Length: 99
Image 1: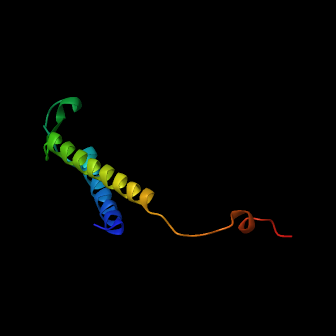
Image 2: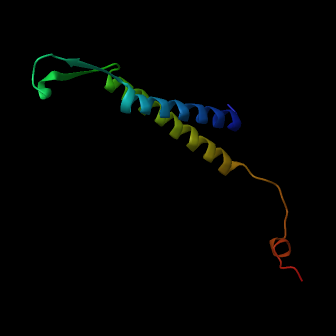
């Protein structure tokens, strides 16, 4: 895989992690509200919340993707650290003030 391909994949996986985190945080439940007639206002309403996804499996998937992102980021940085650019430059002359 080239560095550019890895960076594109990294971005795509990062978006997927964000989507899954949103699912875990708020959309992973089914919420039903039941109303009963003829009772006090506190007893009229009852909410039932059911998880739509197994929170442990969802967290496991997010962790797997985050670990992959860590490995890709590390590999890209390692590859960039090894790459050399053959340029000869006189920094004093290039950065000298205008006279």
